[in-house]
Length: 108
Image 1: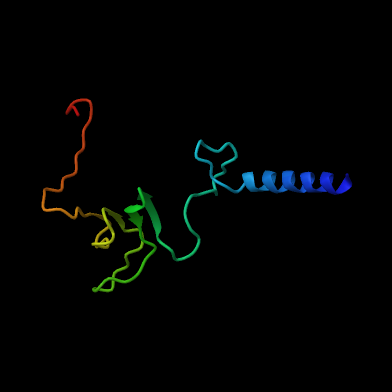
Image 2: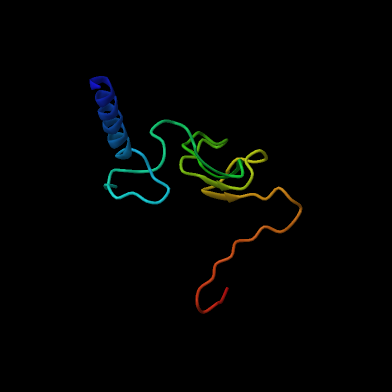
């Protein structure tokens, strides 16, 4: 009986401590000013839908002219391009590629 109680207590402690360091899909109640979503190493931050790359924030590297790509944001399919500017959008089709900005005065 004691072994079972220890196992239950250990499981509860592990779940409680893990809840404080994970990001939940439905929101978090213990987020502080130093918490963030991202990485602490040199890996890019990648977002995917249907397992396809959609958005990437680069951690850095040098371009051909010696400038850094740190913080460059790419939107599109990264099988075909890498961000070359602070904000770079690529569509891998032979069609127009637009950005749309609207407000209450301009309409949708």
